[in-house]
Image 1: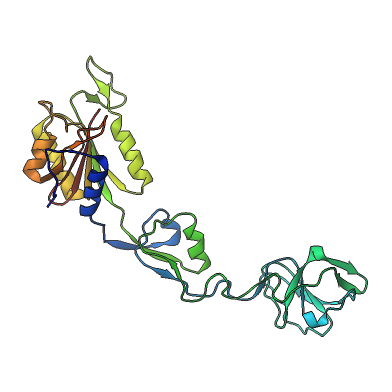
Image 2: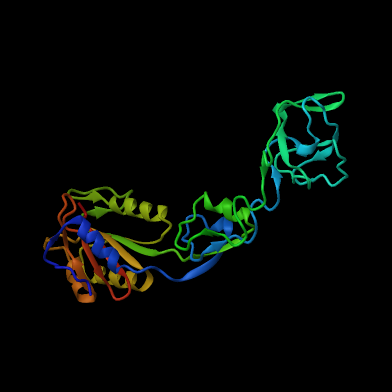
Length: 302
């Protein structure tokens, strides 16, 4: 199944390629409210349920005009005002303009919005200092997205960029893949937990904190089995628990060629070894393999 030469010293790129060709995705999914979906992997394709913008609206604060009403230097009286959330719905007489704010629906018949910096207010109305072109400063309905347009692909990790996009489409919940559950433990009789006085020959367990932090940052659920002594029975129990409860197991220590390094022996007994050595320094004794239910990654303690 593995297809590796377990005795070979594998180049890093070939090892990565070989692992990626065999690893499988977690296909179980769950439906989550949008605020809880940050950093989760999207398990569905998202298409827009509406037009964005949903209506023609002003891109600037200014005045909505009909081009036919504009004559050089002739002011236009203001017929009314349009605000975001408060559209102008009154009569719009010929020869008038409408005061409009950014985001407000453009009144029917408007050809352009002239930004207020290009106008001058006077007793007789608004004088336009420049002549606009048709469509100027108007965001058209569906300009960003048409209804049914594909927005996000399945398999995407949802970031702070995608969540507001989904919210703008009125999407309150999404289907995501469940988090990967990864078991971790460190091995070695010399390792001691933080807060424990060190005896001669002891060192503090540190690798596990780095591995756990990286897994947490990736959005994995981490099953921390702590420090396992160099004892075949204790290691076997930890391997079996990880295989029952997790998708993958990452260990640090116990993958070298020392007399007390039992990890390889247990992996051969319980599962299958893919490879055992990488052509990198430091880090040569890196192990990859498979337990009955979980993938195994063994990091050297050093």
